[in-house]
Image (cartoon, each protein chain N blue to C red):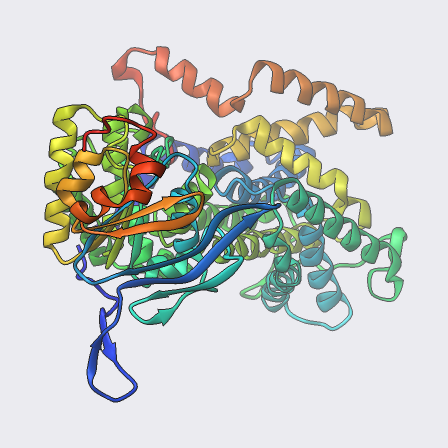
Length: 328
Length: 273
């Protein structure tokens, strides 16, 4: 007998989506650039999913998220390139170090609202500073080169269409993990905390512990994504893990739709595409970014997921396949 | 529903069993920037009581509840539950120790389903952990579902489990909140103006419900303005005025107390006494 949360996951829409995503590389095999772009989207989708858990479901504004992405990337890079660690071990260490970073940050969960958000932002800035300044370890602003391609079960994953499957597996595992969490008493407490923290506390929920757990889980995910980015590109540099990326991931969540896991993935895709298309503008791409965000907030406050939900609601009943929300 | 957890009887210093108050406050005070909301209140609620807390608006009744449930830190004094000092315990720890409460205006989770609203109350009995979330058994989930259904039935809230809590009426939201409080298996239940905003029929049902809850061994403390309800339901009544306890006793004793008459009943003539 299937486990209930898995049964909830396997809707016709999710089956079609998973199969379609698995079938992409053969279709794009003649176009490495597009596959590379897709892989980048995959890494950022992993980040956006992690932030969705914290922000969308827990209602916690974590503004230093990219810093933990960096912890994973540099840990994995340093351990494989300088210390000869195999990829799986480095990958695990990347997650562990990101979690350790979150443990260091965890005392700030006692701060409230804006103060908390500011503290996370500053924590992210400190991490960015470390990546820039600790040249012995990170090679500073010049960037860290020579990160080896990952070897898994004796196979070295070099080609983008192979790497795609590595990301696909990691992303799917992450999605299922978060989906599972959300459909447990833990997830119920999480959503309740967002709605009414006072009632949550007097109902017996340890909100401090819940927030710390959230930060740890989301950081582990960011660390994993960082490791995968490092081995994909073979090169990492500090700006990728700075405040601009934190804001970009935040935008992915907001644009895709707060409280929607598919929304986070779609948001990641849209934002990455905008970044790619406006990269010729250099620094000025931020202007496009800013304007896009303002427009989206004004016209699509519930994000793309909200738009999709609204369209589905207008369809005749029979056509509403899999149009259910993540929350039961 | 879980049976009462916090013990009401403990052992005295001499080794013989003595009655320890289920809920006890010892000279607790709360000061907000010069305003003394609660001023040295002693309260001792015995196991199995239905205690009424009355007093004019601004007497400090809700502040007292916020102190007992741990939402506010006391400025002075101690709070004990079943003899155990919980003055410095967090709200969730007090809930786990068997303290449940409701609010004057229902504090629900409007965007969550009815089921989830009630299920949150289970946290008082079993903390939601990451481990349970990842390897939690099917049994656990089925137990939760059964408990939620039973509790909703008990508070007479026959609604669809999947509906959003925001769709409930005011009176239903109060019962939803009560169901959530009961899920933790409280030994002591604090009800903050349970009858406020209810019509006559709903109040009658509420009185019945409180009696049933009491009948299950739960000690009840309730704040109420409806004097008829308090006089009919509560064995003992504590009267607060300007943050101080001015009287305590049975309905008859309190009714006759000259301090109470001037401070409370005198001001709201014909309050149904």
